[in-house]
Structures are given as C-alpha cells and as structure tokens.
Amino acid sequence: MDLVYRPRRLRRTETLRRMVRETVVRPQDFIYPLFAAPGKGVRQEVAAMPGVFRLSPELLVKEAESALKLRVPAVLLFGLPRQKDDTGSEAASPRGTVQQAVRLLKKNLPELMVITDVCLCAYTSHGHCGLLHGGRVDNDATLEALAQVAVSHAEAGADLVAPSDMMDGRVGALREALDERGFEMVAILSYAVKYASAFYGPFREAADSAPAFGDRRSYQMDPANAREAVREAALDVEEGADILMVKPAGPYLDIIAQLAGEFDLPIAAYQVSGEYSMLKAAAAQGWLDETAAMLESLLAIKRAGADLILTYFAKEAAALLKG
Ligand code: PBG
Image: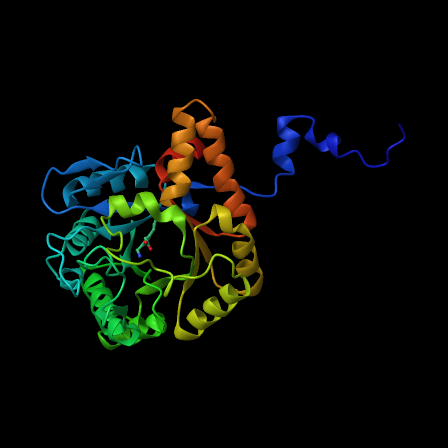
C-alpha cells in the first residue's frame, strides 16, 4: 500500500503517543464534593456511592487534607441539617453544619479553596430547591433566602459559592447581596446549565434531598434542550457569574463543548452521583476496569472543553495522575 499519511506512525510507542497527546487531566482540574453531617465522629457511607461518606466537620477536614496532599485544590460542600422545616431555615444559620465545616477547613487548610453549594433542597421538609407558595416553587421569594445562605457561607469564609437551585435571577441576587456585605471577592461558580436529570438519584440519598412530591422539571432544564443552555449561560454571565458549570457531565459533552466555544469564562462540569455509581457498580461486577473507565470518563469531560471537573473520583484519580 502506498499511503501518504499513516495515522498509526504516531501511535507506535508510548513516548510518541505522549508527545502528540492533545488533552491532559491533572489533579488541579478537580473539585472534590463532600457531604457535611452534623455531630462528631460521623462517618456514614452512602449506600449507592461506595467510597463516598457523610462526614462530620472534623473528619471532613481530614478527608479534604488527604485530597489536598494529592494536589486536589478545592472542595465543594453540601450540608445535612439537624432539622428540616418548610423554609429550610437552617441553611443560613451561622451554626449550620456547612458553616462550621467551612470555618474549620479555612482554619486548618488555608490554601484549600472552599466552595459551598447554595440550595435549599436538603434543608426543606418538602425537598424542593425553593420556597413553596400554593404548592409551587416561588422564584422571587426564594432569591432572598438563597442570598442569605450565600452570605452566611461567605461570613464563614467560603472562597466561592455555587448556586444549584436553578431559580431565575439567582446569580444577580447573590452577587448583589455579597457585594453589599463587603464580599465582593467571593466568586460565584454558577450551576448555569443544570438539567433535570435521572443521574442525581444517588446524591438525593446522600443529601436526603429527594422532593416529597412532584419533580424538579419546573426549574431544572429539559434534557432535550441545547440552545437553551447557551441562553441560560448568557444570563448568568450578565448577572455576574465567574465560572459556568454544566451538569451532569458525561451525558452532556455536547453542551460542555458548546459553552466552551461560546464563552470566555472558565467552564466547569459536574460528573454527578449517577455517573459515579454506574462506574462503581459495573466495576464491582467485574464488567469494567474501574481505573481505566474512570480516567477515560474524566479525560472525555476535559476534552469536551471543561477546565474544571467536579467528581467524586477526585482523590482516586489524583492519586493515579500524580507525578
Ligand atoms: C441540589 C443539588 C443536586 C446535586 C447537586 N446539587 C441534586 C438535585 O438537583 O436534585 C446533584 C449532584 C449529584 O448527583 O452528584 N440542588
């Protein structure tokens, strides 16, 4: 055969392959999600997420420290309240689990970037992400509550806040409230494009945040829509978002690529609980090579255009990518 171009020439040895490799995943790309539980000495494994634990603040600091040692620069905190109520009031309490955990993390690991999830779903008795009026999630009433939550996280020392509620106008509401209190340097990592996804199932067990009735489709995005993602992201940019997130990640690589092409802000992607659980379950059955499948899934998210990846695999992957 007289082929002018043989793609296999550059695939011949590992050194050659490394030389022409287009995408590299590094521990610095990861953000590690953690679940803060009230109390002391609490370490409960989430049944559907082997290797993921609900941790009380002092154990959470240990976990974050071991991630930081592996060069994972940031954590994203979710909190479990002591008590739920109609308005999710514990979410903004200075004595709340997340606020405690943030203070402890910043005191012990000052160089770690601490990001907090801003939402009400784990704190409300009905499990919806906002305040209810007449059985519906009231958008504008929710904004004020979310702003208070974000300010309480900033007061505790959060470096970034990450609103995940999908109310309209929440990035602007948070930016204004943070600036008013002198937190103009606290950044907003917006869950700009968050789909109403079945892949959040295991997380809702971890955070005990499943809606008591109905679903989230009146505020989270329809998985069928791609152009709407650009519109959602543009709104968040106008309102002052610093980083745009797409969620879930693996099933939405086209959306990540589109946002990376259209916007000049950093793009984050959230490899969600269901994506993690699927790989873990298949590996446990011996159906997939866990390490290889994990690294490939992260590489694909980076290749699609994500600068940052939120993943429950952060520590495992960082340990392999080290060096
Ligand atoms: C809260 C929130 C959810 C996730 C992150 N923040 C669940 C939801 O919207 O129901 C999902 C994360 C995951 O599945 O890993 N609004």
